[in-house]
Image (cartoon, rainbow, N blue to C red; front, side, top):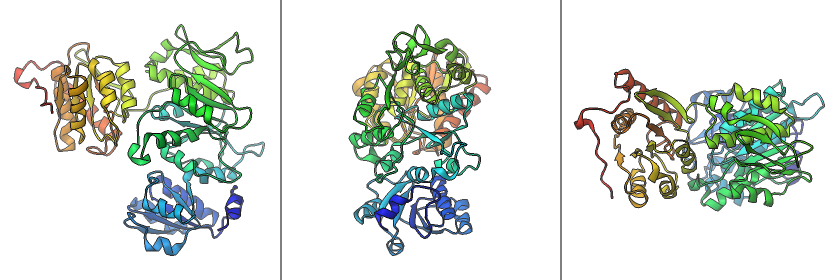
Length: 518
């Protein structure tokens, strides 16, 4: 395959017939890629270590072959197929044997998002142009901000849809026969790493983009924090209208400063302070826009108030920041302040994101199972100072010491779960030795949260909060963060249903003792 032909494959209507493509992975993303390419007439083989049975059954129906087996080394079948392009699902790290082989062999390596951008003109708007794209990334808050921005745009009269890492592949939206005005695309650092490999004349060029924040995460995938940061920075590449950054996070400002953007693109800041011109911020409890109006030197537009956000469970500081970022994205496509305010009045957070499960016996039980890294957990702890903190799981190569040093000393107690308990307990021993620490060493998934709630009920008193904010992935003991959160909620409700109401257990024998410290 010549570079010239690949450079020409920038439209649904280009000649994709016969293009030999190896698709890596057979989950929702891999199937969307294979299905799209099959419709375009490409010659496709899917390579995967495992496969959803339904997807595997459908592949021959759409005319796609598959190879299911170990991918720790390059299969002979793959070498014999001699793909002209490899399109990888986001789980395939840069160090994966097949990715290294393809790059060493000079084979083009794409992600699903690049393919979606190339074929984005399958369905166009009335003016003949494809949908605009707004990109969202960050260590935390991506999904909430993506949903918020899409909701605001829909309220503003646009056909908009949240896609990407949020769950719906971008390719599914591109192929929707009804079409859209805006695709609000949540991107993981994995997807952005693949976008960073782009070359050619038609690289992805979003209308607006934002990196919400940056902290250690997915270091085992990227290999270093610097590589993780560099991947996140690709969100701003070729932005046309608005590069939105977090004024409270210097790394995001530096990304914008270093980005190669389209002439005329503006830097738009947001934080919880009083905004300057070209910023969004908060003045006396009012969220305001000083970026998207003519007289931004002396005027501001009111978007909503912190009091109104509180009614929707959005008043925690990190949630207010997410609202401001989403508002900036919505304003970049001319959504009115009134529409933003109306959208927020009907918005509800996803489950497992600082979700109050129950308030009983004076104790508030909060599920933030989606806090899968230290940065997210820090935001939760800031919202609930003095909580009984349920923490731990699979740390993904991230050092939790800084989080414990900065936030751990203010919690009432820590209940530690997961396979990486030793690292968490050691961090408390070094940085917050006065905090009582309890370990849950249950081996069975069904037992973990029952024991957590038993311990928490023995610690918490009237007015306390029990906060599940693990700062770690869930896959050591649960199938997902949602499974972890559901089991926590079920254990809380089961205990309350027994009539304890989550109150302190009066039986001294039931009072837990701190686990041994290393």
